[in-house]
Structure formats: C-alpha cells, structure tokens
Image (cartoon, rainbow, N blue to C red):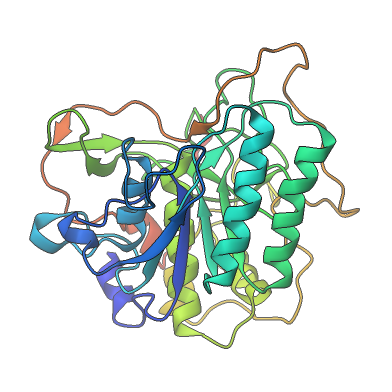
Length: 345
C-alpha cells in the first residue's frame, strides 16, 4: 500500500519541518511553493536557498516534494519546509555553535519537526557538547521533535556522532525496502527508530537524470515527514504523544525493544493514520533517542586517537541513473501489515 492511501487522511498540512542542512534549492518544480524563507548560519553565508552540495535539497524533496513536473514525490507533500542552512565552520566547535543557533531559529519560526540529516563525526569537548545539548533541551521544552541520523559508519568504527548521540534527539537508523538493516547504518543505544534509507530516488548532481541514493540521511527525512503526517492529523497532540505512537506502532525487532539496530522499530505511520493504533499519553519514558533508564548517555564508540574528520552528510555514493521516481514514500513506510520484521545482515 502506497502513501497515497495515507494522504487521504493527512498530507502534513499545517506543519513546518525545518531542514538543517546545506540549504534548499526552492526552484525545483517539486519544491516550488513548498519552501519558506529561512536563514543561512553557515561560516560563509550565501543564502538559505543556495545549495551547492545538493544534500539539503534532496532531504527537502524526500520530505515535501509534490511530484510536480515529474519531480520527486515526497512523504508529506502538505508540509512547509523551512530551510536553515548550517554547513561547517573552520573548526568543529563552530559547527556546534551553528547548530545551536539553527535550532533556536527553527523554534522561533514555529517548526514542530526539525530534520538533521548530518552528523559530527569527531570528538567534541564538554563545552561544545553542552551547546548541542542546550539546543536539544530547548527543542524538548518547546514541544517539538528533532530527528537526527545516526550515521553510516557501521562498517568502519561505528562511531556515535553528534547530535544523535545526545539525550533529546530521536536517532534514526536505516533499513532497506524489505526491512533488512542497512549494513552501513551505525548501531548502538542512540538508535530510537528506523526507516527506509536505501534505493531512494534523487536528482543526480553530475549532469541530470535520476539516481538511487542510500543513507541514514534519507531514513531521517522519512521519519521527520512521518511525524509531520501524524501531527497534522492530530494537531493537539504533544511531541511526546507523537513520538510515543510512532514507537508503539513501529514494526518490532524479534529480539525485543529497544534494539541497537532499529531502536523501537521500523516506522509505520499508516498504523496511526489509517488504523487508529497507538495510545497517546501525556508523557513517555522513551522521549529521547538514547536515554537509558537512568537518563545517562552511553560511552563514545570512537577511539580517542582517531584524527578528526569533517562533519558528514549521511548519504552513501549514488548508484547509476534510474527512471523518474513515482514516489519516495515506499510501501514499507505506509504499510499497515504487522508481519514486517527486520532481517539482520
């Protein structure tokens, strides 16, 4: 069952999703009239709609693409995207400051969902971690949700990057369309949910056409869009209630929850929107992506001697050009079936 069935109930209308990324090119046909005027917080600002990398535009299309003129059909075509451009500064601490400013700006502009499909893959000092934590705390207090990709480093050092490894972020892992955990998807106690992150259609950056892309970036964007669909259908729900039903209705791993690979399961917004499943409660103990029963963060997984690397957009290399996409919202996202189970690689 495709997302068009869910759109009869909700398209995400009335919800603003802030995309903290490389900028969003609002001139794409599928993003025209979808992008709100935002702000560029990057080290050398050129404007929030200038995207020389293409990553932020891709995430915006996955979230809110309308499919106009044969373009990408996103998961929540009724939402408005707020482009909040981040980028990197001359050192990693500057990026922590940029993220803090960007989070605060997104809240000020009324974003209920914040999408962060990037991660800092280098150790941070306590001061810089506090900046990120302050931003996450303000998001939680403002009754908003931030979904952050956990990273694509499972096949290397499996480092838990920032901010997905801090309390308050909803860490998102990747699975393929069959529910198999992506081999690249970073795992650990920071994982809260999983979503499809392989074979996602996108614009090729090397001369046009369509490419299939993979990464926890895309999984994060799909999770953010799914939250927007639910919130649009239930505008009086709190952030805790939205997150709670997403976790309750997710396809559970066979080994019980939470799983270090898919957290509380693979998201299934159709269970909420079409079947009315999920019990909304005023509070939930699983509010943050990586909070344990004591609310403490697990140890870092990166060796302290490793040389720092630049902050990374969470996508893997593109595959060969593909035919024009029909829609990003795949059946695994919208399914109401209770039989979907992850298959471990």
